[in-house]
Image 1: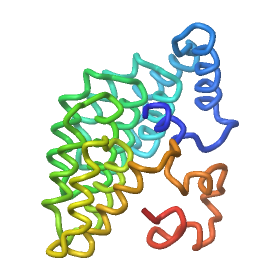
Image 2: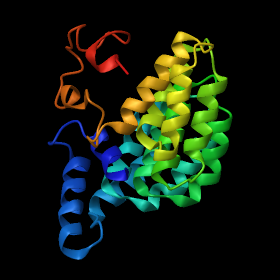
Image 3: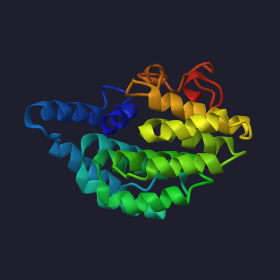
Image 4: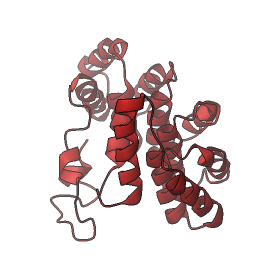
Length: 235
């Protein structure tokens, strides 16, 4: 799961954090552990300390996670605690902590997940982060959230996406029952189908991930993404 999320964050092989990730994984094959680049990690630690721009901080969080810069974990937890209302930044910080394997963040991420019903992106990323960090209850919590949430399409989509990534085998039958339950709304049933597809899919990454790799996001066609119905926007 964690390696899959790492790969989901990769966008361009020329970036320094991506190269650091590749070298770290290569080192894992010979030493059994992820091998970090000290210079890259120290640079990211300093950059996180000095930057205040939410977009930059979010990018640094992902980069630090990819590079295995564990010294940034405390600073990221502190930023997360003070940035919960900044949805994109909070989402990126949760993924950064998950990439670092920072189990000390589990309690904070659980609170974030519980308080993010109106912030779908944060809810989804917090759930994925908890799954990566080994929270045994996140699959059940997502199932409960899917059963309770109705009418909020964005929230249902977020829950379905997260459950498709972190859901376990014991989630299958409850989701099938929800899918077949005619008393449920069509959106809830569709979300259950999405989650089932994600759990059953043997591929380590979502089906549309290859279309996002090496894309020029500044010059994309609407068929690729228009924030609603492009290939990359579909559940």
